[in-house]
Length: 145
Image (tube, rainbow, N blue to C red; front, side):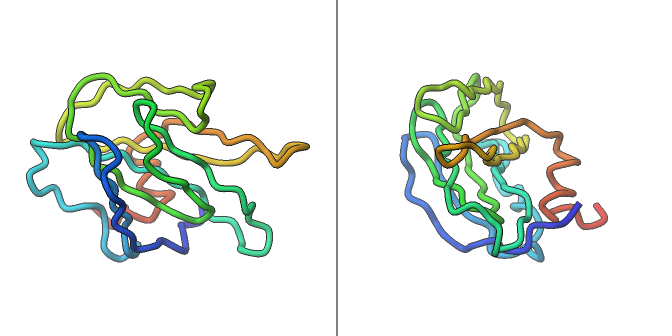
């Protein structure tokens, strides 16, 4: 699979008391260093590589526990730190039709692949859980570990 070519550098303000957003600067930096990994887990949200000329303009809104944490555009990877263990609801629509319930343990990484299904009125956002290995391969975070 093609690696994500463009990754932006943004530090996103915390929307809720338990989450904080940070975008990875480049695929060369590797995954987030596991400093104090006993105190948080990391959600990685990404959209697969699409050539810029045909990439949908629509962004995928990412909600964690009913709070909007990021609007994910094409060819982007975002890492969100979760500072609370237990069950968390992750979805890409306000109505919660695409909800994925994840049981979080500190020190672990969770990958979610987002996309847009073409439709008559601009398409519908989708989300799926992928394994850590597949997520790292598709995002370019796997560097002969």
